Length: 194
Image (cartoon, rainbow, N blue to C red; front, side):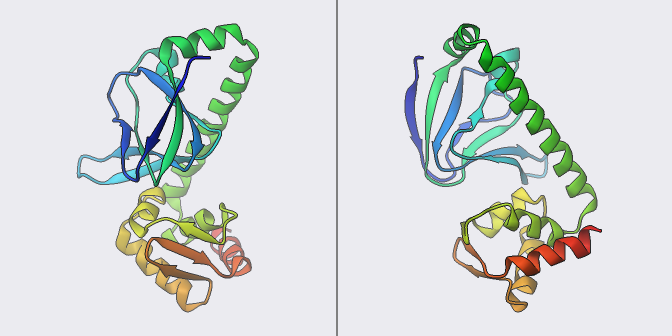
């Protein structure tokens, strides 16, 4: 398998939506964000990819331009494989096709659930779900990044975090969110999600 290693800093873009596909990447360290830009200049984070996850495979398979922008949420280390090497690697390892199709199915299901969530659920509910989807007690994420991920304005996320902070469920500091009371966040999800 022919690959190289690349390191990215926070905010650095691997590719923009609409660019041709030349390679796939595996995340070794850090988080990559899959981003869509609106005509108004706002960003929505469709997915966050962590260690062990693959990006760019869809465009490599169908030869179409990338459907979304891929950027580093913080310091990131990826392994890069050129498109032709990736396709050859898949042909040489037929068992990888099944894993790839399974992963694509999971992503489509996840995107469908996120679309329904963004369409129908209040910001506070989306925010609580996001916080509880992470096992860390301290999340390294800015309020702007969080707003992009939960498809809300930074102001509405700030307001929701302030309300949660007054309840003692979370505490915010520069670029970090400290999760203090998971049980109460879970109760909020049950209450608002029903």
